[in-house]
Length: 332
Image (cartoon, rainbow, N blue to C red; front, side, top):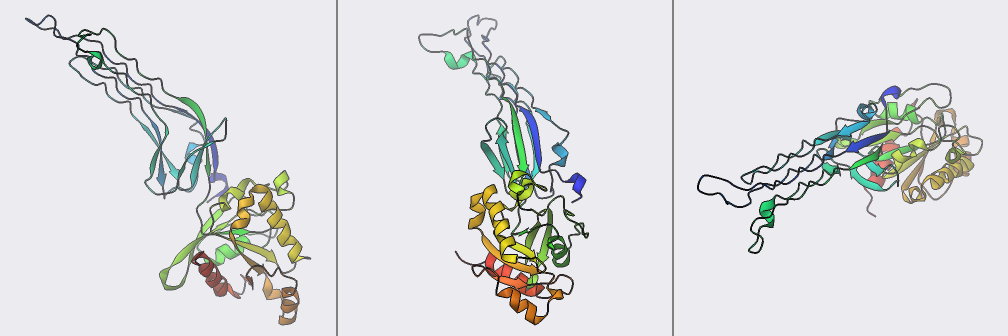
């Protein structure tokens, strides 16, 4: 995913079609001057529909398509003819897309499966023709229902990537390097902070032709919840992850303190993130000998599984994959 092509937030205007009006026609024919009401119903207005597509990874195609306007339904006709329905607008979105009301922030719907279709903005209902209102005491109703108006609203679409494990760490912790080693993803890697500007996904091959999906999230720093660095804009992408892999470089002056900083930023963003399963990987450990590694191990948190890895030398990479796989498939 190129950084300039990855869009995970758009605001669009949705206008569903109004319903067609019912007809108040009366049947007339030679020899039958009072044939009675035969007005048909109006057609339903067009819906705005979201459809999940596993072939999409971004909302880029909606960035410049701000207004979606569905067609109105046609009016009912004589001889009980129902008006045609307005054409629906079907918008394909990536899996993991959430739709919210732009004014209230209320969650409307969520697309999680390929081919899943959900109505975002329903079209107006067509009005009933005068045939529906005839009765023994009202044999010639001269009225019919108008069609319901469509809905005009602003909707926010935000993407939360679907991945099994999310990488969490400060800038330059080695997240992108790990992803490039264990998958075919090719994120940007460089020796400066905030190399990763957008999330990256990679499919990690495992034993017996199995696999899992890993998400590399741009690095967060202390104060991210207040907008420092890249802020917490991309943390929504790990809300769906089953496991969080915390990555801290072995040359950090205080690994335990750095881990607490990361936990604190996650808690400020969404306290529920602390309920997820966690792993801790100490990266760049090819720089350590056994004595230094054991010295660092004594300072690490004791409440989560920990592994020393090196993406450069492949040290313990398979062990890390085994730990991730076991945690993903552990019974609650």
